[in-house]
Structure formats: C-alpha cells, structure tokens
Amino acid sequence: MKNPLLTILCITIPIQIAYATTAKPPDLFILPKIVMGNKHQYVLIDIRNSSEYKSVHILGSINLPINSIVKKKYLKSKNLILINRGYSSDTLVKRCAKLKKQGFRVSILKGGINFWAMKELPLSNNNNIFSLFEITPLELYKSLKSTSWLAINISETPAIVELTLSKNKNRLAYKNKYLNALETITVPKPNTTIQKKELVSAIHKKLKNKKLLIYSKDSSDYSFIFNIIKNQKRNYNKSGSICNVFFLKGGLNQFNLFAKRVLKFPRARKILNSENDCDCD
Image (cartoon, rainbow, N blue to C red; front, side, top):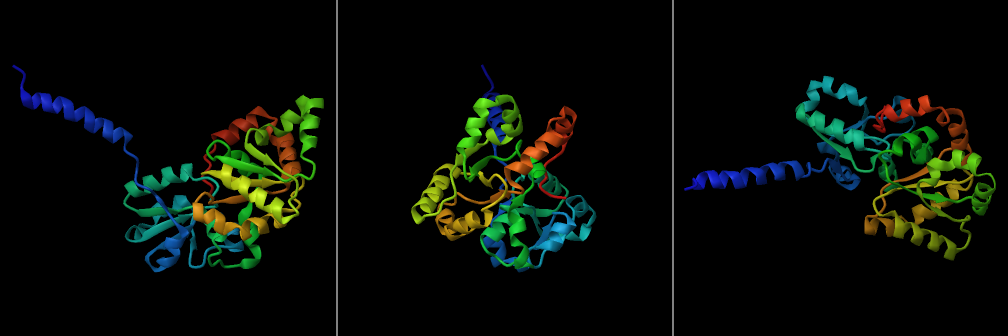
C-alpha cells in the first residue's frame, strides 16, 4: 500500500517547482505620475551620461552611473528610482533585479525621462527638451535586439524608396535593411486636419506596446510632427497605448551613412551586438 504522505509530496512538489519557474518577477516599473505625486519619498537617480544630465534632467534628480550605486551603501535605506532615456530597459531590468538582491530598494521610471517629458512634468531646462526625443543611428541600432518599434516614415516622396529598391536592389537593401525590418507606416507630411487625424488614428491602431520611431529623409518636419503628437497626447494616454516617442537624429540619410561607414563591417556589427544596451551611461 502506497504511503499517502509520499503521494501528496509527489504531487505538490512538481506543482511548486512549476510555479517557481513560471511566476513572473514583481513589476519594477513606476509611473511618472506616481513619482511626481510622492517625490519626497524617493531618491531619483539619473543614470544617463553627465552631458545629457547637464543639458536637461528631472528636477531633484541626481546623476550617478548605475555601476556606482552599489558603492553607495547609504542608498540602501532609500527608495531609489532609476531614470534612463526610455527606449530600452531589458538590461536595466536585470541590473535592477541584481541591486534588489544586494539589498537596495530600487525601481525604474516607466518610459524613462522621455515619457516624463511627454507628460509635460517639470524639467530643469525647457529649452533643451527636444533632445530627450532624439535617438542617434547608433542608439537605434543597438536597441533593435531588445526594443519593439513602430516606425513612421514621413518622407515627402515615400514611393521613391520602393522604386529605387526595384531598380537597384542590392545597394538600397543594404542601406535600409535595418529600418525596413521595422513595422512601418509610410505617409507624406500631413497638412490638413483630416490627414493629421488619420495619422494619429493609424498610430493608435498599430502602436500597442511598441515605442514610436519617427524619421524623414533628412530629419526635416520633426517639430511639425512632434506638435501634432503633443496635441493628441490625451488620446494616447487614455488608452495607455503610448509611452515613448523618438525621432531619428539626422533622419534616413544619417542612418544610411552610419550603415555605410560602420555596419557594413562584420566585426563592427559583432562588437555592437555584444554590448549591453542599458540605455544609460
């Protein structure tokens, strides 16, 4: 006759093991509105590089490289919130979890300083706000392995891309294969109220939990599109479908130049792909 206790153990132990391996870790992210309403309870640590911090930062935050936090033992008694650019957080989540194991009470600002600026919350310098919405070709390339993007191509003549691709496939496919791999909405510059609403509606339907990337041929019209999105931010925020908006610095031309000078070399791609994209210094 089987031992009933042994039978119970045989059933419960596998269930506990399965639960341990499938249970999700606690949410490490905290919304800007919660931080803003309780800033006195937190120490805000901006982990971007010092030049970015000096240009513009969240009022009351301090600038500290993430690798230096563990050396500041006095911070263990504080509620820490880490602030990055906002376009990638996968590696940061892992580092945050490690800090928790080392005894730090730490969270990550959801959407980084980019989302904070989108919510129009207080910053140190309103003149440099647009820099928070720019992403360089290098930063974009490094984010591709960990970030889900919805791209908006606002080239004046988007059909030229397809026409040139059919005529000279090898050259153009090489230049644009990284951006072409992204889910993309290609539209001309929206000038009428109806066109603006159609653009916003198209973004709203496809964005889901993706980051929004906007680019043109030469980075022209960015301020125009930025104002459209800012004016429609209430529509986004109600659904909770938008968090971050970034504009490709230098546009498609700059990314093509980066691909030509850097990404065409396998060794360069290997080095870049091996680097952790912490979205921080």
